[in-house]
Image (cartoon, rainbow, N blue to C red; front, side, top):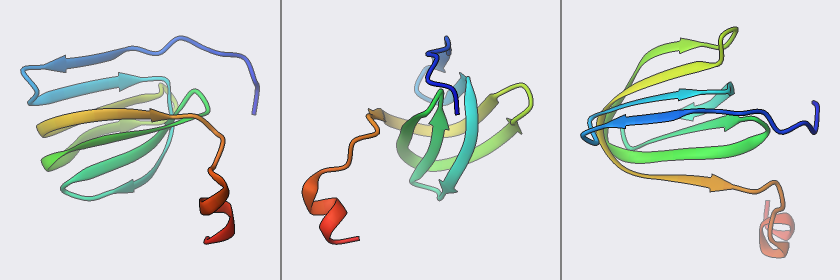
Length: 86
């Protein structure tokens, strides 16, 4: 993958709808969290009753409905403990 940082956009409406651009893949999805990769950065959306409405990987768009509690961006570095205890 390229190391070029590309723009992405996150739109959250009333913590009930979320649209995210720059999505490369969705790694997992449950009703409480959605884990995806946005411009080579793991991004996790936390909430309740989360539902993926639209996923278009060619356009890089992800649309989610539900009660959105938080969004976490994680850098690519894993802690020593996570590397030891896979």
